[in-house]
Image 1: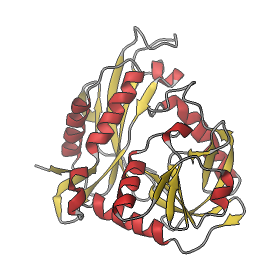
Image 2: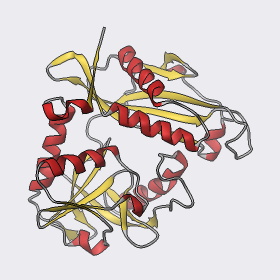
Image 3: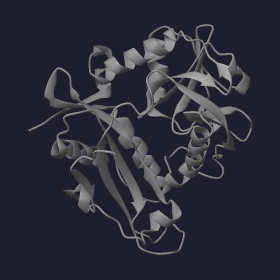
Length: 304
């Protein structure tokens, strides 16, 4: 059972979460004509009167770009202002997750993006570990990631997540924690809602944006931090067999953060995961505003 934050942003105002409800005839509900974001926040360990948000500007910019696919002009600075006010009004006391959603709010039955009303809503919930920090088991999904030529994969389009949902349930119902999707060219793509990395001979490797992945904000942070820490980084196509003989494999995402992979199909990966552990600890320190070199990534919101 989730514990939701008490206030939501709905129909251009702040209302109690329980009152932020849409009609059964809402266009987005029927056609997946929506795009969402997700970001983590937490009370500052050094000063609980401050709330820390990780890479607020990047999240707002990506949601603004996603809205453009919906034919909705929603400036990133406007999104930022709403999210900051959302945090101030809720004043969370534990780590939490914010879910903003741009959606076709009109009531109707015609699948289209023109001549239909759009809106933004925001809600949040308390959130600890999305996946076990001890590691997860993965299976290669029988479902394939969509192609950019059939769906705008540079945005977090809600309709695309039917594939993620099918893959996740297939994995769990067959005894695994998570799914790894291939793209239609047979290359490793991503997990159901996370990017994927492997470590081999001290090198960190991850699929490139031309492999139909979502350009994850945590993925970008991992790549930049890894390079700063002196790890060789390769962004390229990845074959399935590379995962099976990797020294380490890990997933990254806003909800998952950095999560190690223990097993893929029937291949058990090495128990020692020094690179994954080092990156996870560094990202944790950054999100808690304990790394001066990355302070620009952390938005500090002072509560009244």
